[in-house]
Length: 309
Image: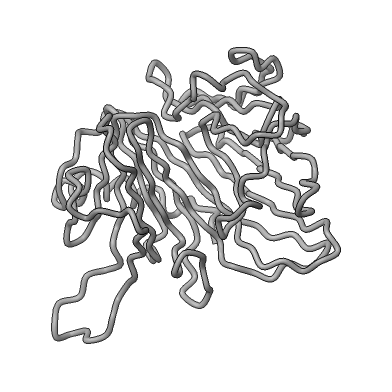
């Protein structure tokens, strides 16, 4: 059974909690659209919350807040339109629909539709980006989950094929000017990339990739968060063709998915779907074999339940 209740969080008086026996999430209607809390019963919030900004609203400066947010790629001034205003909330069967006001500087309007499955820890999200301007604009939807500190991101490579059975390139890896592959927070495995979030005050780290497997995960304590997303090899994605990115600093880690770059005409809506699953009692992973033995069986359990396409 899915329960939908009004609640508060810090000074945000207008929040909505969606829960079943397996998990709970909280979205705020005071700013956003934002999902600000997610977790299993009795476990800590998987999402980072900025202690100095939680509960704030209004103003013209973009605030980090934390949680899961909706951006526009490629990253530029348009990306940082402040989501500081109240959003409308429409209650639906097993979920809600959050719609922000139109962004005056670019004409886009963002909506996140959230649906929780009744009998399992499975959330479906539809990110909708509508062009209300009079101009065609080439953009991509960008969904960012800002994870609480202390966990490990798990990113699968495309399938490995031994030489000389495949002689052409198999997948891409995008790096930023500050990406340091020798940073000890990285583990560059043959089949998986791991990125650990630590309180190391060193420089941020980021990579992007075209992820043909269509999933990525974050393991915090013994709780595993898995998100699934589309991977269309015929499409062009931002950041040197990245549909998956991860970024970390000393406070949090971001698990980011992107839709294809599209020319969005006036009045047109583009969509970006994610499926989320949570699992408890998951042991720590440190290498490829750990992921194969611990994480991959859980991923496979989810794959016949996906709405992403």
